[in-house]
Length: 447
Image (cartoon, rainbow, N blue to C red; front, top):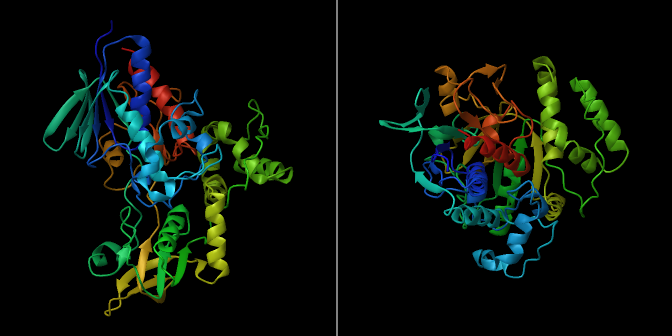
C-alpha cells in the first residue's frame, strides 16, 4: 500500500469538485490510503463557484444535459443522476414536472446540486477539508509545496490551481459609487425581487446579460432594458433539436497553422451544413490547434474571438426565443459602444457614459463577466509570476507538460479550468475541465 498523499486545491468551484472526484476514483482503483485533500476557498460552500451559486431557476446551462457529466468515460452520468436522484426537483416548484431529456438545458442550480452530491459521495476514498481562507502565496520547497493563507502555512505533496476566473470586470466609477447608486450584478442573486424603474442599462451583452434579462423577466419587470457592449454581439442560439454530430473539418495530422487558415476552414465547413455542427466538430482539436500556433498567429486569432465566442457559447433554444420576444416587443435592445464611466445623477438615478455620451437610467446591472486573464493585478497567479513560481509564454502561463498540465519545471504544481486562460482556447466548460481533472488525477497519486 502506498503512502498517503496530501493534496492542496486552490479554488472551490466546479473544477475543484471534478478534480476531487477523479482523485477519489484513482485512489479507489489503486487501493492506496485515502489521500488528504484541502480545498482553499473563502466561500461558505464549496462546489458551486460563481456559475452554480445562482438561486434563480431561470438561469440554465448553456450545454445540454448529455454534455455535462463529470466523467469523460461516463457521458450520461449527469443525465442518469437527474433520473435516479429526484431530490433536485424540490429545489424550486417549477422543477416538479420538468421534463428531462439528453437535450434538456437544466437550471444551473440543479447542476450545482449534482456537483455537491458527487463531493459528498467521495468520503470513502478521500478525506476532504475546506479551508475558508484566501491563499496569498505558493512556494515550492524541497519537502513539497507550501501554501500560505496570511500567517498560516501548510505543506503539500502536490497542489492544483483551480482558481476559476479572477475579479469581475469593472467600469470606472463602479466601485466608488456602488454604495450610493442602484448597481446590481456584482454578486449572484443580488437583483432584488421588487426591482422597479422605467429604464435599466445592462453593461455587457453576453451570457451574463442573458441571465440578468431572465431574472428581470421572471420577477415581472416591465420597463425598458438596454444592453451595451463594445461589439454589441448577442450569443447565438443552440439548434431547436439535437444535431447529428458531423466529422471534423480538419485532419488531425494536418491542422491549420495560421489564423487565416483556421477561419477559412471553418467558413467552408459552415457552408456545408448547420454551422453549429461545424463549430462543435472542432472541439476535440481546438486546443491542439491553438497550442500549435505561433504567438503572432494566436494574437491574430484573438482579434476575432468575440465573434467566435458568441457562436461557440450559445443560448438554450427556449432562452433565445424569449429574448427575441422581448426585443420584438421593444422591451429589450442591444447596442454596441464602450462604457466609460458610471456615476449617480444626484436624484437616485444613474448616468452611464457610453462612447463619451451620457445615458440616464434608473439602475445599472453589471454583466461584464469575469476576467480570464491569469495575470490580472491582485490575482494569486499574478503574484506567482512576480515571485518566479510561474513562468510565462507571451500572454499565457507556461505549461511544462501538456499531458499533465504541470505549471512548474520541478514542483508538482498543476492547473485546470479558467486559470489556464490564454494557454488554451477551450478551458472553461465542463467537457474541458473533466478531461483536465482526469489527466491531473492520474499523476497526483504517483509518487
